Length: 423
Ligand code: DGY
Image 1 (spheres, rainbow, N blue to C red):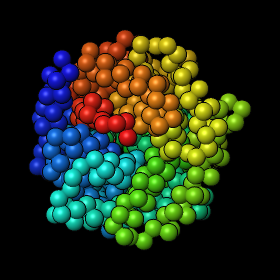
Image 2 (cartoon, protein in one colour):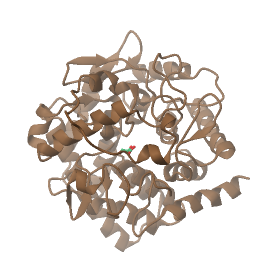
Image 3 (spheres, protein in one colour):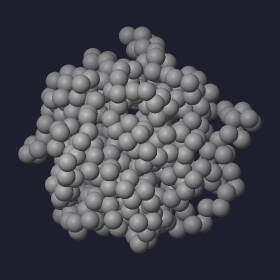
């Protein structure tokens, strides 16, 4: 059964593959290259075709902006029904792109690939140049998304988190004044049942913020202050801290300068604890724009485990709380804790189970609570065995929603299956 599924997973990836990159899914929902999808996809390929894995990241890095930013979407095909398309974003370097970024998973993925594969000399040269580009990207995030040198970076659009319509953003989004006479035409809810997608009121704000960024020419020097949305997100910062730790190792391997990064890591490790609520044993977001703590029980707050904090007291408390997130349930993890008032079983990032969240948490847990980590791994594999390689799933029934043949679900399934020695 599992062997069959391994072949199916490979087929999903190969079915979505274009020249040099892979679509998140083979239907019309996401007809471009997405940044964090591409990272997960590369990891999946690395288990059966190292060249494809390296090509995937290489192509993504071709779209890097001159200042170092790596966009969240690269539009290789200009003729699609996706909204917002390349002309609406109206930016990009060499390749048309969006004007915002997405979670910085690439250094983590690249290190994983390097750790477990024999790399040919020619591939090493390619990887060295990738590491250099990632260094530039991380420097961009530090310089422009943490201009006050706090050790924590901001996101300036909910799409930058990857969990677009999470209740995490509800407060901040309500504060955004929707542009007058806003005109746009969504494509997503023609492809997928609108009950499973963000609301029009969410899109009104996504588009308003996007237009504002565009009107400011995506100038990172001014946007930290000016953006209509500025949030320090636990998930994004946890991924960034882990990625910085992995990048540090990569910089050492290739003899690149790394002292500044090391300093930033020490600062982040310390300052991220500012987001920790000791009493409740949870991490919470901070809305910089509106100066407000955002307390929402999102699974992404547990990405802190992935950052491998040295503070074991915190790690222990977090794990204890994580065990209560979906207490003794058949399916986990719901993206939002089910007893939360705004939990929705079927709607995108407001409740459903996502394979990448389970994978990130599993990676963060396996060196801290192996038993619990293995339960999550088995439950994630079983969910896919029963319901297929979908975009997301009901936490109550396991029923699949969103796009079928979803690349990162296939990729991360392969990674969980093929993982060696739990490292
Ligand atoms: C979408 O189109 O739904 C994407 O998540 C935006 O990046």
